[in-house]
Length: 541
Image (cartoon, rainbow, N blue to C red; front, top):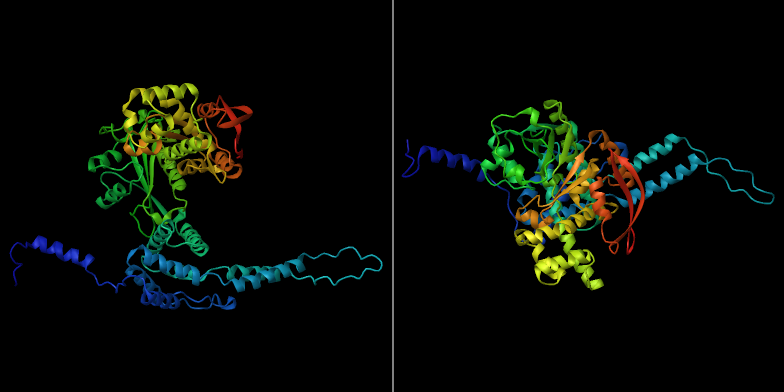
């Protein structure tokens, strides 16, 4: 038997053999920079692999395309180098294999014509000397329903058939999740744009929403004894509070801590979205006590557990953005915790406020430019801040708030607390996008029916926390018996439920910034709740 050679042990040889099985498998030919050859190859591939839509009458009798065609698309797509080449293929797929607008127009006209005939009712007789036009002949409703079904069929884009057939292949759903992640990246980089691309993204998102509905998802708990790959994946994908090392990860899955994730039935054990929970005796007001200053004991005292704090939720698959997983995960985890701790009634988040510093600096700049002065702070606040920083507020604050140096000054921390918390309350409550909360984290929890309960000062002293939200975090409180009503009020009437403390902060904003009209005051859980209508100086909001 031939020896292994100098310096090559059997163990090392085995590792190399195993490694080669995964890293040196045959790969399809790769193309160079986009050019005529690559574009022709793309067109040829799409023409061959995207199935033709069968005639309406044959839609249930046409055999599915050969699996090799879908596999060819997957191999070709995997061979492309760089985001630009993948974006080019996806753009061609969206533009050239969507809906046949001619058929849609034809069937729409048919539906309108039949709808008029079915709904026609005999009118009053015409007056003397007035000729009557022939009324459309009444039709059976079945003909209209049939025409509507043909229209729905014509509205299905051709590429949907390709996605549908790919999903039936082994690894096909996972491939489509990654394809959508590439599509979202291309849109963000503006290398794949236009209405056809947006439409294809929406179609694929809806398909993934069906495939990843709660009936296909498994709730799994992570412990220190979970497979190493799972712990590694969760550690790498933690987007809110990055995991520093293995000891940090161990703390997050130890006593008084819970970590859960959803996996798909086709890929059990593979995290899709992860939720971290701290079990405490009160609603936490800072993240340091949860992830940094916590030394887990060996056992839990259930009598000390009265509150569950959701302090991090992270999506591990970017292709599932917009698919409703987080809301379902929180609901499932609440039920799981209540089974384990029947006395547990208090549920709250401890959430970051991404974008607040950016909004604040932008507002300071716009006010200075348009008004020549700063109206976000009261006169006394301006004087106190100016005395400490020794210069004009707007320009100096812009420099200070983009770093974490300002938190080292006790005087500055003290004088900034009241105005920044007041402005942060307005940012979360009053800054909107299409009528809903501008802040994405606020929008998520408010959609779930949570209450904007408390803003916490110096709650996140990490560099990320101080530069993105001036170190503040917010608790969104989940009153389980009221989440459905709150969610409906937010999604339907765009009403945000907030605690009295937050409403007091909002109502104390300078009148020069916004005019506040208090409509009425009602009692909410024994406290006054103020409902306000805000009218911006530049117009109604």
